[in-house]
Image 1: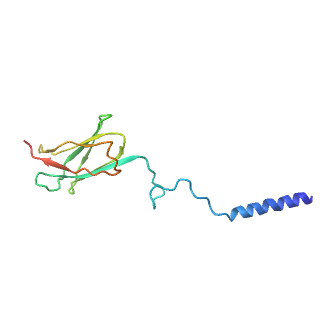
Image 2: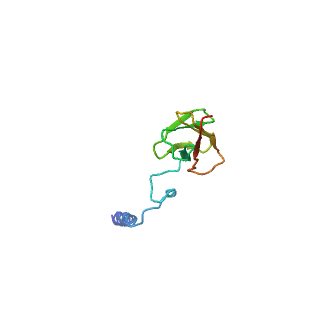
Image 3: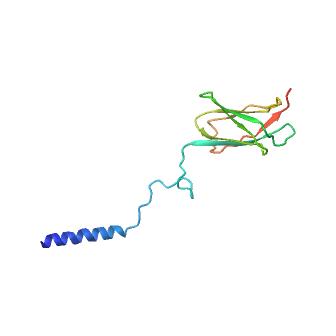
Length: 131
């Protein structure tokens, strides 16, 4: 009986000691301090602004983004600030970017390359008057 009592006391002592230990730290701390829920999924966000031939911010311009692997096209229509953005872009894919306005003005085609390693690249576009 004495052995059971000693064993019970040892188990209780071990449980009490374990409750006083500090919590374990995570093996993989968050990538961005202050945002523990945000994970690095390897995607990129492309941003920029579109300007008209007079160098003003252009509203109502359709910015088209073409995935050169799948050939899918995504589009964004600019507001008064002339800004556009595309989220969730693969770092392993080239993209072609072009702006078009309903009056026929277009920008030159720009490329976001796989060799551009920025997580949030900025590509600004300028419309050229219809020829």
